[in-house]
Length: 343
Image (cartoon, rainbow, N blue to C red; front, side):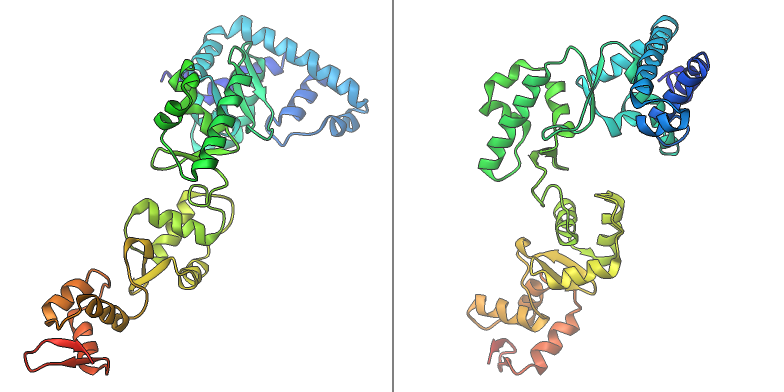
């Protein structure tokens, strides 16, 4: 990407254009759009300027027209670049993702995203979608069929609710052939802006209310992590991974994660601090409980090598730990042949 299409360059453009405004217009725009500081309501700005709320609204409208005229006239190349980026993203982008998706910016420049939101308001051909029951706050190209796209989301939500499990987009389209008239890029962009759908790490689409795809509680976050990585993990690693996933703004407490692992029977302790999912075939209980289960399933005497081979798939323990259990626990008996049976 060319360096001329960075957030820093956009800031220079807007600062230049804002400085051309009348003093009150400048104050209203800076206040309303949070340029360099937090945004303010019309009423708050009105109190500062000793003007009515309606007068502040009129000043905002006039100032936006002036800014838009300047941007269209003097920065068409930059505006066209932004339009092309949004079009390449399917024509719609979630508002809080816009900074990183349509312009060159890093995490340290998060405080500059209000500049981008103001700039987007000034470009003809781009509209803002206010958050409602179906969509998050988003930017969308004016020529996009908004009502039809909302219908697609509703159709998918209804279908997934009936099926009770995430599906690939190919499945959703095969069940709704009329949706194929829309560009695939557009359809792929929809789950991110939807309030009811979410794309999973496996590339499937599910309902955002499902804990297995959008976890809210600590227990569901643990389950999500183990399902995602498909292998046993130490509770400290699980806590670190939950933190890095940034599901929400809640602080991750390692001790809480450990307590939830202990309390929920979906999780099985298989080693020192290491947990797996019960649904993977792991047996709950102590090493002794696992040995009993293995031997009962066998239905016959077993030598130590066979017992160890099976038990070691269930528990991360040393050979000696299994042998001590067989030799000291009253539930087991060693035969003259050297094999073991349940007493």
